[in-house]
Length: 353
Ligand SMILES: NC(=O)c1ccc[n+]([C@@H]2O[C@H](COP(=O)([O-])OP(=O)(O)OC[C@H]3O[C@@H](n4cnc5c(N)ncnc54)[C@H](O)[C@@H]3O)[C@@H](O)[C@H]2O)c1
Image (cartoon, rainbow, N blue to C red; front, side, top):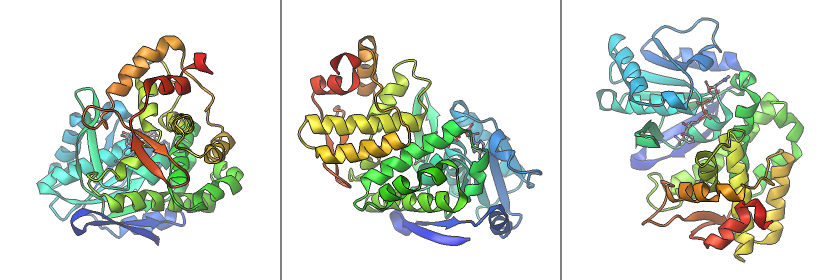
């Protein structure tokens, strides 16, 4: 496997990101850990194996299972298999499995070893990197968690072959976000130039895209590993809009990544109305979003405004009681700002267009 990147986190901890040539390469690396391991899958990620490795747990898939019960199942299996503190928890799956395996590993004997093998695009470029672990609790997403980076993150884009199209496109929403957040144009150009190969999930092209994308996330995390300086919150570009859209009504046709892409476009439009975003930059971003067929022309109906606005108020990222939006001045220039409600209405409600 090729070492693509080393992400430096708090207290001298770091995660190595390794990229496999193919499944064989990945399997070979995983077998080097020996038998002192616990594998954590969900039913879908487990089906990538014809026969599962020993010492495994297979959970039900989906966000609904991202809770204490699953943590208990993982920890009980660790006890049953006699794992020690130097044993390795291997989270093999999407963001749900990786977040839960990381949390369970951080709790087991006050911290066992952790390796993550993300099998969704979203998890490769986002959830597996940065050390955040979590479960949902009391109807709040990711309310309980810790910072516990994996020592290794193993990327094998072959695992994406079985990923449903909407999940793949959801991951692309986060990649596009990274393309806008970074100072240089590399990821933007790469996505513009390689659209067909990216959509066809060409192994080498997707691996390159994932590496460029992770490097952007790493840039922000390294400057603010525990999310205390506000820098890491720039990674939430588009998310305040997206969460409000997702939780305010019947928008099930929007996967998370699609909602993020919509939210990015709204943040850019809002910035232009406020006179802080360069119009040429907004156009350039919209061009990439349209190329990947994200529905950035969608607007909510007037009748949905109240629930949308209430959902905004519940944004867990709000600081001192005020919702702050990530806006962009230009390429790689995010900043946080409160926004005027009338301008907000203008960019989200259909009536105002
Ligand atoms: N820790 C972080 O920093 C961070 C960042 C972003 C998101 N997250 C979390 O990540 C989660 C979302 O991650 P996700 O989008 O990967 O969701 P997910 O883990 O639910 O995976 C999406 C679906 O794809 C299936 N799947 C996974 N790999 C597959 C494969 N190779 N082939 C076929 N099906 C496969 C899963 O079983 C699931 O049904 C959320 O819970 C979110 O809170 C965490």
